[in-house]
Length: 426
Ligand code: AMP
Image (cartoon, rainbow, N blue to C red):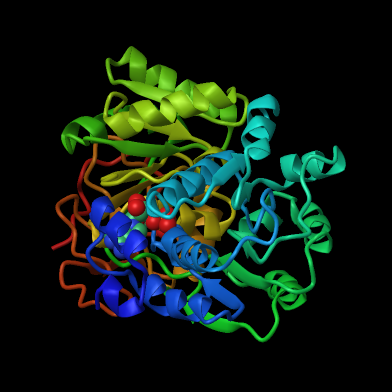
């Protein structure tokens, strides 16, 4: 399928061509025609599937084709949880809409509102916003949502995780009843379905990856390691695999700073990105990483949400997330748009319960790499462990043939701290 078959108008087709897109991704194939027909949409899709274009392209087309009701009216609102994601969506709208003449703006908290309100004063057809700043500007009388024709709620599950659900409901209460609504979430737990019910009218449903499954193109490996050896293991893997660029996840802001500092001390260009850094510092770190100037970006989950880096080869879970869905979100940063990606996860003693939850969620066991210099003892579990040697791994699929994988039951009571490759698979 190509974009022409989706009945897109020339200014948008030209822009997509200029972006280098040749064919629509599955979510785009499904969503674009439905949105163009005016349906409400319930989309189950992760970042990395092309969902931004799936909603922004038809919005641009619909607004381009319709007359403006009022010259300064905001006609489409995209609500998204983080500043990074908001900026990225606005950049995408700028790119896809560059030949449409439509105006767009982005607002988010943590920075002065003046440049944002100045941009709004010039007129804005499509506004991308985070909930807090949007409500703030509405309260100040600087924004009205009464002319919104199309509303997008992006990353709804993340809004819930981040405690924004109350703000989201407040924003929704300010929208006109007559509107088209598009709702996207990577997962669809019951609270999210309730929220969707409250927002959408007879929605069409599209889903590209069933909720809670791992992106198939990503090679995943698990390293059991003592907490104190994680730093050495990270350096070892960066060097051993000659990793060109990696996003390293930590659970805490302090942890992100520490890991970045250690890497820099070891002569590897690294920066940390998290909520304590100023917006400018975060943007700068992101730009450096995208340009390749910084090799390793260390991030907390919230800061990393929506980071979109083409050709990110590796994601490293320096710490295992305690929410299993976060694992899926994290590793989804690599392996984008069909590219191969690799995800390493470092698991210490205290994190083993988290790994069990992740295995349950993704319905596969992440292959364990034993053959590395910092291997700590694999957990003694009632169920067998799936283990592989440290060599190129097969592409993982839930139902893929796993010929190089062997099932092992570690001997009970074994308490040796480390071993060195003694438990290789065939
Ligand atoms: P998203 O899921 O919207 O964050 O998009 C993930 C990445 O895929 C972004 O880098 C987009 O620029 C890219 N992308 C989106 N649609 C296409 C397409 N049809 N062809 C190639 N790349 C795309």
